[in-house]
Length: 156
Image 1 (tube, helix red, strand yellow):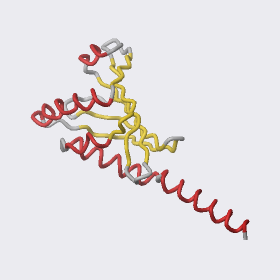
Image 2 (cartoon, one colour; image 1 turned 90 degrees about the vertical axis):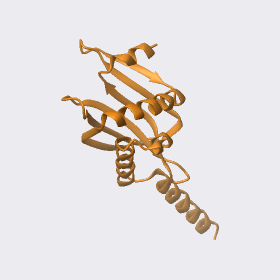
Image 3 (cartoon, helix red, strand yellow; image 1 turned 180 degrees about the horizontal axis):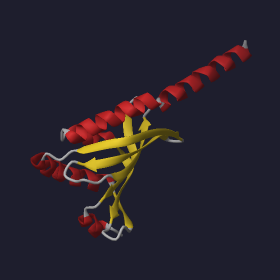
């Protein structure tokens, strides 16, 4: 009887962990909702980030050199509120291609090429998304390449 209970408990724990981890399809659906929220300038975009997310802008300098610029979630959200207003006025959107989703130890890693609507080039992006115990998906890591040199003033 004891062995049966231990076996059942093990199955529930393994199944519960698998459910909390989410699936590749769920990660893709979350990414699609992220793209939609960003391209419609939705305030819900701000709630898609973990409070402890690691956020980087990888600035591509004119000479091709890359400079990583880290942001706290709080600073990033402040900047996002401002930039959303400007983006909306300019009808700015991002289009993603070559989307790849790979399981990693803390969720799913999503990589893609991002084409800003006001440009003719594509830039790399990577994010790690994670399903929380509550069932909500959050971005826990994000790196976006940008050619916007203004971000260099935040480099440390």
